[in-house]
Image 1: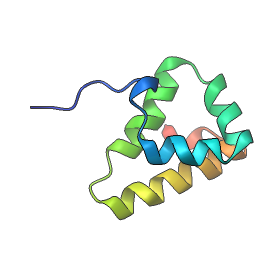
Image 2 (image 1 turned 60 degrees about the vertical axis):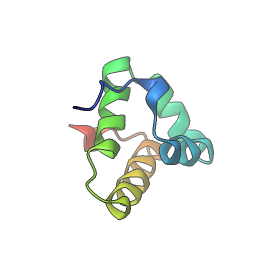
Image 3 (image 1 turned 180 degrees about the vertical axis):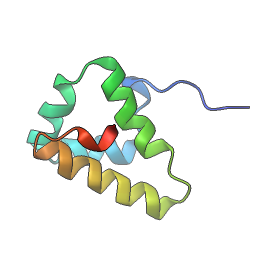
Image 4 (image 1 turned 90 degrees about the vertical axis):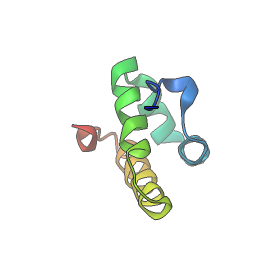
Length: 73
């Protein structure tokens, strides 16, 4: 059974909590269209370990906090 297609309602809890603590990152994420938001979510969900997921969340939030979305391709 494969992964279902992610959308903003399927955001990993760690990403959601981290965005909630970083106002600029949350604003940047909120300005993204649905496809770009899904790309951020996939970026985190494609992690193969918990440590990698934590690292990707940190990277995503740091980039979004600076208004940078280049990390998602």
